[in-house]
Image (cartoon, rainbow, N blue to C red; front, side, top):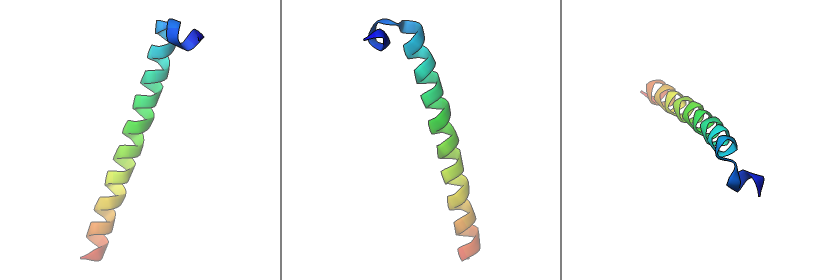
Length: 40
């Protein structure tokens, strides 16, 4: 219940989640571009 009522905690968790998703998205795009280059 603390999570729902604590704006700062929610903001911190959301920022960490966004950072993680951004990192994984960039990594995935990099791997896909490498695979495309190798398969040519």
